[in-house]
Structure formats: C-alpha cells, structure tokens
Image (tube, rainbow, N blue to C red; front, side, top):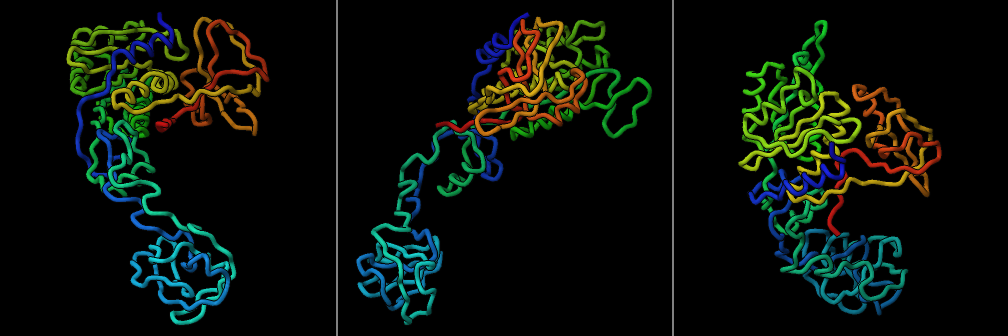
Length: 406
C-alpha cells in the first residue's frame, strides 16, 4: 500500500500534457488552456483614454472659466484640437483630444454645460491626470497571454480585446463515468428494499463540469462480469474512464480483474488514505487512463479531489494548486486507528490573522451530506491519534481552486 504522495508521483509521471489542439469559439473557452501565445494586434488602450467624466484640459491653464469647444462621448473620436483657454467635455472611455494633457473630473468643476458655454474649472491638474495612456496595458505585438494559460473570465476579456475568437487551445480530455453495483438505480426512480439511488455518477459528472469538462455517463452497471466488461469497454475510447465502486476486496469487486482483461495496466491499487483506501489508477497501451474510486460517496469525491482533479489538470497543462493552508482546530479530534492519513470534512474560515478549521458532523464515508456543509478537508497525518482543540493542522479547500501563472 502506497502513500498519497507516492500515488501523486505516479500520476504526475504517467499523465503528460496532451499534444492535441483545436480552435473553439471564445464563448466555449473557459476552463480550457491556451494552446499558443495570444498576441496583441492593437495597442490597449488604442488611444489616450479618459478615465473620468469631466473636461479635457491643458493643465497649465489652471482653474478658471473656459469655453467648451467639443463634446466627446465614448465611441466618438475628437475632431477639434484643444488650444489654451479652451476645454472639451469628455466621458469615461472616450479618446483624449489632441492638445489636451489632463482630465478634470466633473466633481471639480461647476458641472457640465453645453457647447459654446463657459465651463467653470475649479480643480488643479497635472500632465496625465485621469488619463490611461495609449498602450498602457499592451502594445501591438505584445504577448497578451502566453500559451499554457488557463482561461477564466478575466482571460476571456483579454482574449476578446485582442481578437482571439475563435481561440486556439489544448484539447480538453474526454471523460466517461461509470458507477457499479447491483444495488444502484437511476436518481429518478424510487428505491425498492436493498436499493439505493446512484449518486456517485452524477457527482463525478458535476465535479468535471466544475472544471469546464464534459463527462459522458455510462449509467450504473450491475455486478455481472459480462455486463460490467461491456460497459468498461464502452468507456475505453475516452482519455479518462472514472469508475466508482467494485475496486475493494469483496466477492463482487470485479473491476480490477476486468480492467486487466481489457488492456489497462494497474499502476497502483490501494492507497494509505482514509477515506479511499481501495483507489486504483491504471493506463492502457494507447495512453488512456482509468481511475477506480471507492463506492462510498465521500470516498469517491475526496479521491477525485486528491488524484483525479490534478490528473485532469496535468493532461490539459493547466496550473494546479490544492490550496493547502495552516488552520487552527476549533474542536478536538481523536481516533483509535491511526494507520492512514485521514481527510475530514471541515469548514475553513479566515479570522483576520489565521484560518480556523471547524469539523462538520460526519459519520463516515457514506455520510455525503457532510460535504454540503464543508468547504475544505482537514488532513490528519498517519500515526496521529489525537488532535486537540486549538492545535494547528494542514487543511485544503475543496473545489476548483486553480491559481493563475505569475
């Protein structure tokens, strides 16, 4: 049985960034990774731009009454050169008229007046005041965003500003999810005695969607070897096949043998982690990957966070950060068996100078409602039986916490 760190090392050494690239509409780009440098095709801003509503002035004129010679709204390019003793009414985002070197906000004037009337300028100014100079953000030919950048809403704005639509990206991985177990039925059905609704399949699909990835559902599969093999073969053409259940040591835990039969090589099976000990990771000769997650819902979601999410990010070439923090426990925790590293659902909060970690009510890996009350996981190292209230622990946030490149 290997440690979490050893399992991650195997994943990192096995999963490489895809070489597949494609052009997609910019509207579909969030969650993808830029496949080549995005270059600025214009200066940004493309002209000296007013950053306040007010009057464009020549700063040496100083306070006084000046004739308004032009009205410059955003989207209008000025036609009148400003000369001493004259001002132009100007709106935020509008181009600065030739000759002007500052903008006085309307709040520092007697208010807006019409063309030909006298504007009362009350405030002093200086060159460049309330002006965004041409090319301040980017100049023509600058790398607006480098290849390998994860595209978030902020990146979409930059790509739109430099005309990258469609957008050149690394192809996102194809995914399929398969939940196993004779007891599983679809969520829209009423369970009979001994049955439970399939929650792992939908949760895996939702976790992928949070990353901007589509995941195909293979539906729940029973513990019949032939049917299970058929379903697994259906998912083998995906970059990642994510299976929940059937990976432990019971008589009906058939997944490991079937994966071997259909052509996956097991790279690890069983990790010293709680929950999630039976976790399996494998790879086919064609470079496709499989994760076998435990069937208990919390185990499935925790293992997705620990192993599947970083693997998917690595495939896309996306930066990944698990966002581990040091936190102070707001209550104590103890356990009898301390053989494995344990991850406990917790509420992480910033208290002004440090994070606190409050464990939520949790009855074990089948208690998936606990995760609805948590935004993170407290990490209890192997060998530690008692964690008193007030002690400092490692913790990590749940969810799609990805840091941009510096």
